[in-house]
Image (cartoon, rainbow, N blue to C red; front, side, top):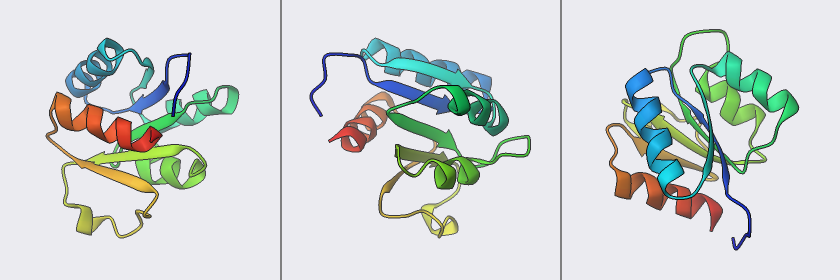
Length: 117
């Protein structure tokens, strides 16, 4: 996907350290990142904004899970991350990319690249 504007990534992760590091990696790669600590905040943000990629953890505090976000916003490119094995997330569709934790910079950027290809 060639574009003359930064890719907008909505990052949803309840672990502060992971969220900050992931946001820094994505921003260093030239993406515009909006980082949210939970699904509730992300859901509110998505009511007024649009992202090119939704990158969400599965389990988070609050009433809106990563699964809820992924299913509600399947029209976006969705990347799902979790410390659990993919097999435990049978609800994931072929359109959703899965990134197991822990992930490194190269794996993260490759997953974002696949999402926008």
